[in-house]
Length: 337
Image 1 (cartoon, rainbow, N blue to C red):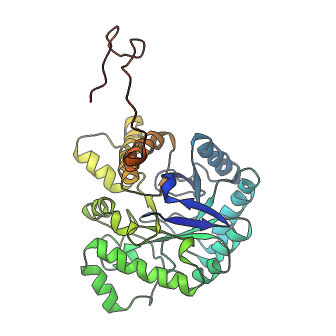
Image 2: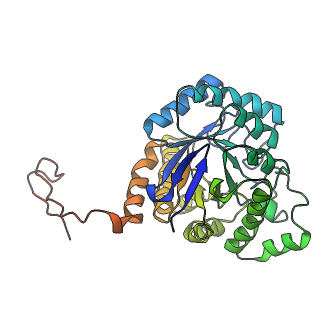
Image 3: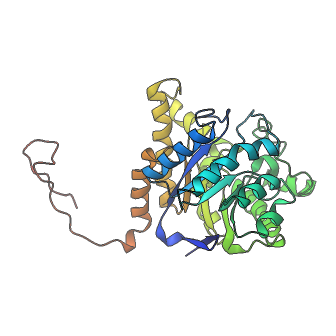
């Protein structure tokens, strides 16, 4: 199914392949790179480096939403991200997505040129958010937030509060808590889309995110990736964030890999494991994938795109490897059909 996404009179087409969205955390406490880019100058330099490496979008955040993080007030968030947006708009046309669920932050970001509002509550957390985006030409990413959908779930209790009280009735929360996770996601996002429409945001300005890593079990995370078609079948472009998520670390630790981020191998393995899921998510039709590094993810994404669009790829006859390129000395290695 062909899907499009529009922001500020520009268009992303699902038929063009997956875009890598580089993460720019302007925070002191993000779970994997907190403090590294915690200044306007450092954040802008990091953003431009991500673009140079191949990022086709940037996601800029001024508040950490990891488990156990401390919320910041809206003005602090604005003070962190607005100077970064303003500087980046002077030197790049790459779309800037702003990771916030607060309407006042979104308004300030849009006023200085933000292209997309990435709301991890899906317009549920702040009742003014849909109106703010609706009055603009910005696009939006609506995320399924299991922390809001299932507040009593053990995985939800370790996250900060993202608002949303009263949007869903107790009966609806009970229902989302007992549905298969794919159906819970669909139920939640249908409400988000309804709120978006009521605020003046049309379908072409909406992208959907399955909420990987937010209050989900390891099995649920994997099922939402495996069944990404559930999200795509809703008719919108898809945005997936799997980079350095805890369930990846758990899978690879159980397989005997070093995942200690304080060691060089452990830190590298977190990105290699994430890159494997980038290849899978690309193949399954993710239109945008949010990542911490670009270099680890570019090749996996290219391979995933090749598999995803295999029917449209030229049916070329591959040549033998040359002796020069062979890793086995003078032998000529034939291509295996």
